[in-house]
Image (cartoon, rainbow, N blue to C red; front, side, top):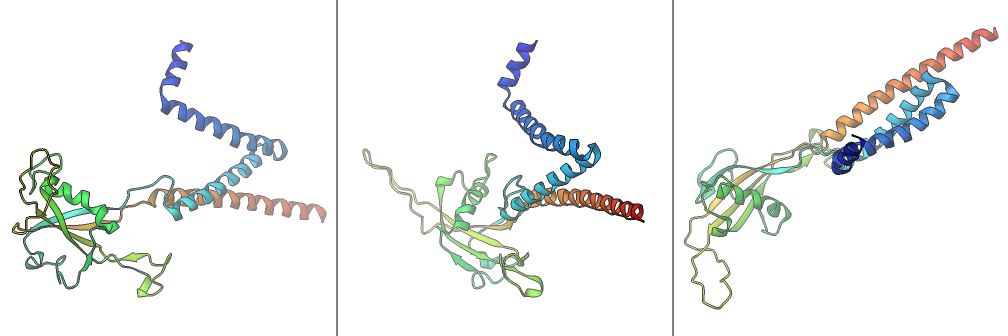
Length: 252
């Protein structure tokens, strides 16, 4: 039975990882509580150790919160809204209002475009379900990209700098593609490089930026630990005031 249990712990990395964390918490936090408990008593030692632990967790959580690391939430991503065949300016509507004059042209090597290209490809081909405008991503090439919005600003339009620029305008991105021209392969030669068919109707994918909730988890963690830390510190402060009042009364 013991051999089977040890074999299971060796095989399952999740069980081993949980045991490592539990052992570290018991040794590190438990040793601090043991020292404080022998000097201050069990109740006061626990409150002091818990206040120190929650204060440390507040510091760690604040670092996670500021830099967007640690237990991350949902990452920002592009979400396809709809597709347009032909000139997007003829569609109109709230999103494409002022196209293309009020839109900023982007280079295809721009990081925002590079981040959105796999999503637009999936939308054009239909992904694993199929049924998209194109059969595969080899049937088209991106030819243009424009964006609108995405600006950040502070309260009442002032203090437009970090970390006070907490508000933002909706960020839209349009990626335009065209079908590739059919080229005959030459026997014994390298496959021809794909070229855009100039007579093909352009297809545009209109996307909106979902900012996600990357810092939500560390924010909730930091606030929760901060509330516990404040409660423990308040209890310690109340105890000190009561102790000082008793000492003052004893001297009279």
